[in-house]
Amino acid sequence: MSTISEEEWKTALFEILEELDVPQYNKMMFFLSDIPKYVKTTKSREEMPEVIIERYGVEASVHKIHEIMDRIPRRDAAVQDRLRPFVERLKKKQDDERRAPGPSTGATGVRALTDGQKHFVDEHRVELIQRVSNIEPILDDLLQEEIIQQEAYDKIRALPTSQAKMRELFSSPLKAGDASKEAFYQILKKHQKMLIKDLS
Image 1 (spheres, rainbow, N blue to C red):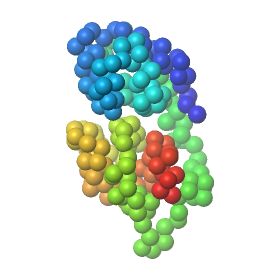
Image 2 (tube, one colour):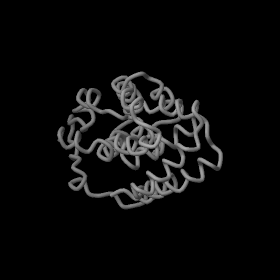
Image 3 (cartoon, rainbow, N blue to C red):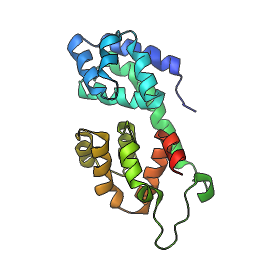
Image 4 (tube, one colour):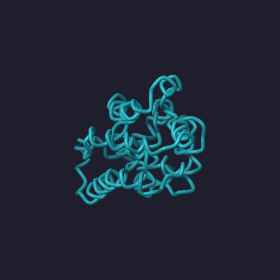
């Protein structure tokens, strides 16, 4: 369950968008690459908070808007004072989850690997590359968990498609070992729950 009220976030997001001038708003729309162009051109500024939340989900949309405001850039109090409480709530949730004792192998659904047995992310590499979409919040969590470094994060984000981003992720950061793969798997479960269920 999200730690953030959808209605509270929608109101704050509406107020944030109202603070943007036309060039800044257009730049934000450009960075919202997962929203179809026809939706961007047919929905008003007042309707966009609901569109953004529906497309990304509550928590992922907080991550996305935080990142975009940093890139526009709008780091001033008018925007950041509205955004900061939601970012801090998500950070606290992530910190609490990291400190919490890990569930048993059976509870996570991750099989204990025997000699020669592949990890879930290796076994389903092709399907994950083809079917994982909206990879940005996954990259955000990988960076937060220090599975990838800033340089790799920036390099992967600059790639043009989700498939290219996933291939790059598999080609270097996920070769570090089973601990990295397991962290990636748990992050996938968080952001791509139905896909992981389908592949399991």
